[in-house]
Image 1: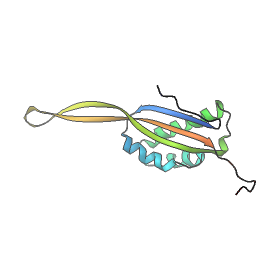
Image 2: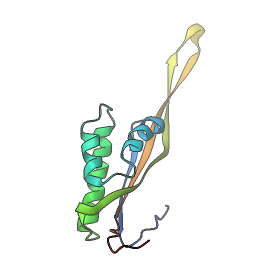
Image 3: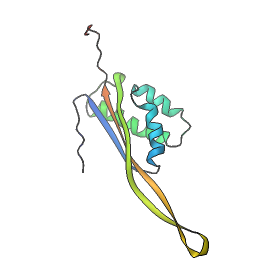
Image 4: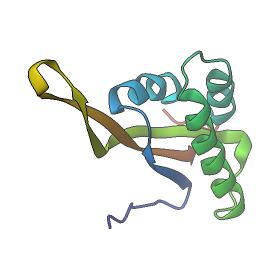
Length: 126
């Protein structure tokens, strides 16, 4: 099992084997990458994509992890990373012409969302 490196101001959540293709999940993850956590939750809430609801659950889990496990301030959390990877592929068969099988692949996806605290540069550093 891979170990994800974590800084002190970072929290993450992982959802494995979600029933969506990685390309479709990545379209939704692009919408929230780099946004504040509260803005990302609103974007997912009003998205028309079916997987947005499940990605919202992963994002809420990451926020809860940040608050409860790492004592981070949820008001300044930002989605630092949001990515998906290929999971298992379920292979199914469908009848085609002349008794031959047609292969159907059902893709599953692993989704990771990392949150980090935004650093406030109000001291005039240049």
